[in-house]
Picture 1 (cartoon, rainbow, N blue to C red):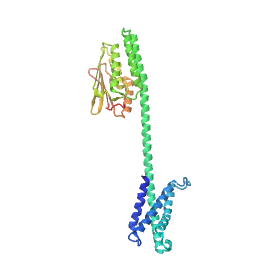
Picture 2: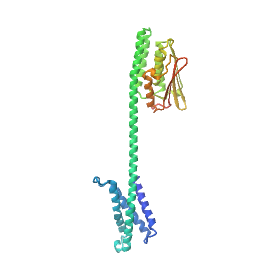
Picture 3: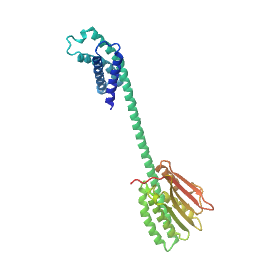
Picture 4: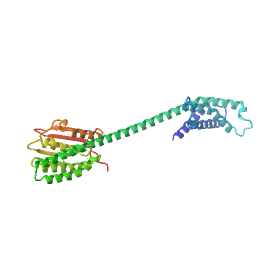
Length: 344
């Protein structure tokens, strides 16, 4: 493509010069255009060769300056070739004719004035094109570095979730042992089954809302077995939301905080409701509890701040998190993020 563009420019310049010279040219029009075209092709070949040869130039000589000088020197050579070709078969050599010699000198001078400028324009286009390609390559490389940085940051945050999640689970086990409940063994067995399903999800970059809701249900069932008279729960989600992309343990983090900071501290306990719905291309997930309530995210530990950053990295800043108090008591935690299908 690039070489054909040079050919088109060279031929176009030759034709333009020929049209200008028609007003003063005394010979054959066909010969004029033939000489201009032949000379332009010789100059074009010299321009291309000067890009590759010699491979190295003296430090004080710039490649672009060398190529312009080569183009200027190639014009007389091209004219000589053109005149030899177009006068082949004549009785006398063309340089012995004053008429043809004047034409040769005129075309040579005109070519040496025009050709370097065309070469300079071609070099500028080449330099600009190369600069644009390098800029695009740098931008792609920068984007790739940013993506890798975001992925690494997300993996680090998910790694931080693991000890937080496991420590909370161990705390629940300790409470079961300390309470001495007769159903402690059944609750512990359910908790082990829950952990077997939950821990592998910690390594996944994303999951579905359906899988997340299944973990939430399993967790709430275990917590309900631990305190059957103090915890009630319900989950509400449409089928269209179950296959949507969701960061691992996002809803579970909200539910876990609702249990630990809302239901557990309350003497009468409370109810937890999880709702997921779609609206105008966004997914809205909320966890509502009727526990003691909390007014600030910082009051609920590092779990929610970690969740906020994971949401920001997973959805490029297009995710929202709100924590709102309820009257007379309780908390409403709301997540909003783009509704997208999980990659297969």
